[in-house]
Figure 1 (tube, helix red, strand yellow):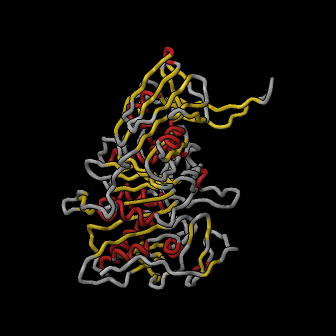
Figure 2 (cartoon, helix red, strand yellow):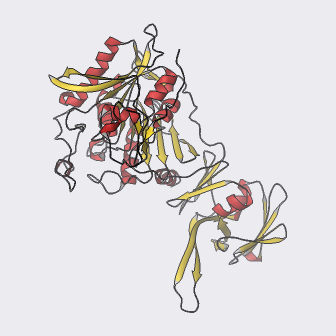
Figure 3 (cartoon, one colour):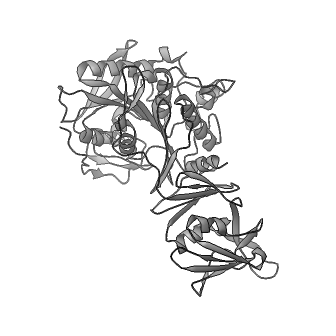
Length: 491
């Protein structure tokens, strides 16, 4: 029987910030590098070396939990490391071994064959820059002619066959995951051999959109539909090899799989802590998009946990080749209560539905002037929405006076708030209280800050990022990629 996910204590090396210190291997040392918080080298991690494909000697690592019973077929997860890392590096910088202990599956950690760099597909436009040494002397491998002759692809294919021969692997539950360049390799494999997998996931390594779509905008895909998870990092500037617009690259990578998987409906959205999720349900397979607030390039330590619980645990490849949904450990549901508005958008996102507002949300700056002729100093900017919208949301009544220049909002609990155009305060149950910025009239509607109203009047959580304010009833920090996604949904 599977056991439990347990973290073993390690020996901190706080002075070490190398990308992948070799001292970690076969030791109890743990380091924190770029947020990739390592764990001690797993005792059950086994190193292997041999010829699997093309007559080339390669290295790989396997993790077989102590609960493994050859009488019961188990899933296989193949986890691909980031550039300049190793298979064992992916094992200590992720929680895959911990989840494997709890769930009873086997994990394979291959090491890239050449220079610890996966040989990925490159577009003609990005090829010169990608394969030329940069200021740090780093460059990618020259790509092979195609997936069928790419040695790293053939290595993964060969290792999957090798492990299914050595262990009782459930072939309907083989999964692939990668970080950074490993994410790019995962996507490359999935676009060509996704029919061999039940799901694929990656963090921090989007693909050049030129490889995803042809000149007519059609998707380029051999592998077919596949359950897909994409983790993106709020502060990750993305690969500059093919675009300076990381948000657009992430959007196109997401759009690719939405189209392949037959997704036509908006997602269920949840923002929980620093994690923002968009759960898409497709006609052929599902897609999960995750954005992490305040995190830069790489993968979070709990990425494996989230991928397994929300997606991999609930899918399998059926005998007819289709993706079957069996129900994940955690249900992929959106926030039951949520309000999101985006700058210049007249629609709002309210608990999963689009709701029309009489006035588009707009940014209003709270400014201070230091004396006559003093320079304008912005003390804060806020997304404003009409009071009539807030009244409808919270089942209140609104009485408008002074030809729209003042209003009294009576909430369902009996509290009253009075606002006036140009005044930075309101009267709440007969007492004056300040707001961060004055009430403003737009298109005949008296408007105030949604963030202030949510936090100070309704005691809710509010987070603003990239022109989007997200309000819910629990702690949440919206990320930039999710803000872009919501803004697009409301356009």
